[in-house]
Image (cartoon, rainbow, N blue to C red; front, top):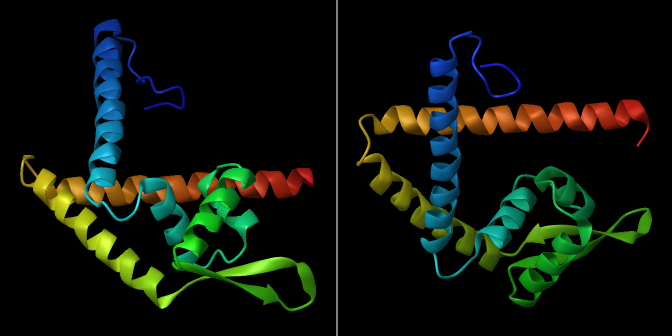
Length: 163
């Protein structure tokens, strides 16, 4: 596949088929996202994403926003809600009185583990309905790695531009 999402082939029929398959893939990912969100009544996907970003070491809201490619006001609202629920805690950052470090509370860690267990169960249920569930999991891992690589490239380009 090339960067535009087409195929390298000159065959118009193959290009149309590739586009149809890509559209099916996009729609399947959107539905899978919805299925994952419905797998837990305790945490919506947006809050899940914020908790996982913090659990992976993004202690500042600005880093969470950058990692998740969402606006700082959106992250601030999510952080405030998660703090009120007792899932996140703020602490001071040495040498920077304006900044706060974010950490999962024990309740946040427990809920994150519970929600991920529920989501894993949902993914396995779906994998059982595919011809090769193990390959599907592997492909999703590859997709995650590609997304991480793309984010790293974008952040590197911004640093190079002096943003």
